[in-house]
Length: 265
Image 1 (spheres, rainbow, N blue to C red):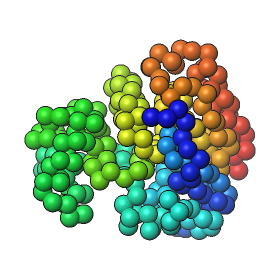
Image 2: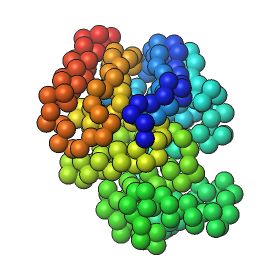
Image 3: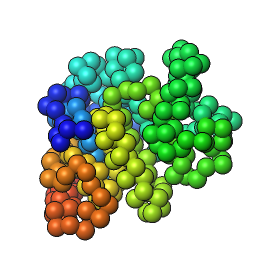
Image 4: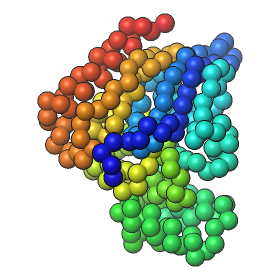
């Protein structure tokens, strides 16, 4: 993999606003968000609960619709990108169907898209190998640990080989040891696939460890208070978290979060 992402824009937001109408009145979830995500970037979104991190990801995925501004994905509207299957989406919960095997869960989007049985089998085998779950295709979700279920969920998102992977706090419910291991595995996966990744997290160490860029967001209405270009090498052992460079980036993220709270409306 190259040492840096290209400058090709994959996701662009300009003046993005989103207001939810509720029984208690309007809720301003996102306000005046400007952001460019380049091809090959690993971008983490971090901020307090309710700041619009997940909402922004859902706008990119055409699961929510902005009330102002624009978003493009590969130069298309989010709706067109969804129909073109430009991205895979990994939710907070693995969301595996308990009555289908792991292989069956991964095959599901491929079945919907009309891939042949031979192509389905080849893709399932390939993505299971990518997430280190070869040999588990015939197991059911309840036979796997939480971490393994999340890896299967990632495999399902990778199965149709979209260039963009959107991940909504996929490791938040896991214990620290499992989370560390999956962070390492995700970085290896990113290097092998060269995908563009948007990743929501509440964890400062996770954001700093994984990302080429860290987007710090303020409390609602969600604004971007800082975009931090990581100075860390793209090849990162877990113990890089003990280095002065890592600690300096984490400090800047923490300061950005503190500054964002100071601007809360």
